[in-house]
Image (cartoon, rainbow, N blue to C red; front, side, top):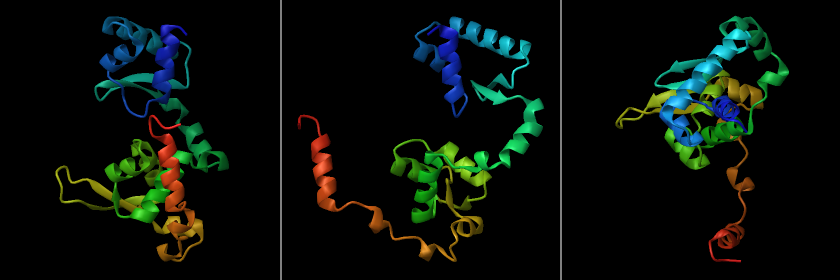
Amino acid sequence: MNEKAALEAILFVAEAPIPTGELAEVLELPTTRVEELLSQMAADLHAREAGVTLREVAGGWRLYSHPDAYQYLERFASTATARKLSSAALETLAVIAYRQPVSRGQISEIRGVDSDSAVRTLERLGLVEEKDRLPLPGNPAVYGTTELFLERLGLRSLQELPPLADHVPPADFVDTLEESLRPGTT
């Protein structure tokens, strides 16, 4: 794969702006070459009137939908296809539903991956909301589900959520699984 295509693929999946230095490190290229590629990509997108633009924001680079596409994106957002939740969003929603109030850091720790994008999506859809702030450095927000969440699931209250224990394998099964995954065990 050529350098430009690799750069484009990275920017396509990025959930936050990526600094030029990090892009250079991942692509194993000098920073000046990455800056050149970014400039070429931005110019190419502009020249062909693409539906996306490349912008430098918050100390990094990220692809954004073109501002002129807003009316189409707004229409698309109301379709059934756009309203389906990704598996990451569903996992995040389950963590919030069962552990609320819960911070983004706690959600990410439970899931084992960064969950900021999924939380933002769920907030945008009105399924979760900031409930409070923790009295810790940075005052992290804690999230909980909304009335819309209950409505969409057909629940009167959170007490009607199915017991989590019904979906957790027995302890001996988990021990066996963990043992088989430990290094040096075959």
